[in-house]
Length: 333
Image (cartoon, rainbow, N blue to C red):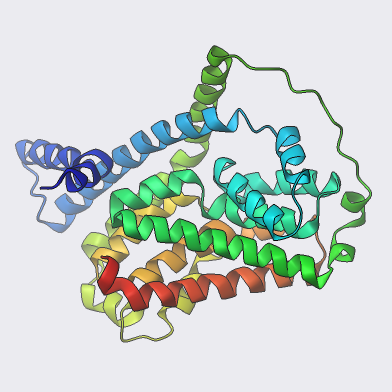
């Protein structure tokens, strides 16, 4: 086993934990090769693995995020113009909240502060879709090639989407109370190392409490898919024989509300059952970026035409990315 295989399998993928849980269940008289035993093992392993990775990632990312409070982020974005501003906004989105519902209040604040609309939309697209946590989690399941490509293409969607919205001149479709709003420049106190660690730990506890129910639901669905749904059914619906699998997966993700942590176990189970890689990743992008609750919140900030254009741009980008991953699946897996 190469060093990277060890890191991916034993460190990020925590394969040792799966073996330990399997031995524990066997000692209790439960066979992991049966449907019930396999479901229990999948549920315990994925729940513990995701929550451990979640805690570590949020601690690190929140520490980094402590250097980028909203006012400082606004000042950084204000220094850039054109497509460079969109690129910076998309990159800053990777160290901000993990779900779109958490990103929308920041989007409203940035827009009220007078930042260009396209820049704020680049931030809004990238924040839930390609946070740093997704890079590590995707590495643990799909490998580094898929993870890096996923993040890179997500950033491309964010930059291209924000740039297009800026070129279309859609500022009049932002709700008036936001266009006429003014954000206050509140001085940010300088935090010391201990303060930043305390802030990061508080974010770990707060985020874990919020996402834990979604992780349980996601792992439960993943266990159901992994052990109870016939493989030929998944292949027929989401495999290579269905040219519309990417479209179906993107649409199926819209009614759900979850972040990357809740979608990982579902994606893992679908891929193991024979779903194409692009189909699985399109589903994840659809859930994290276009969930119905998030769109309802965004509607409070923008008018229907702008909301429709935003949904259309994201949907098109996600579908293109999905078919791209389908085309290169044999090369990168």
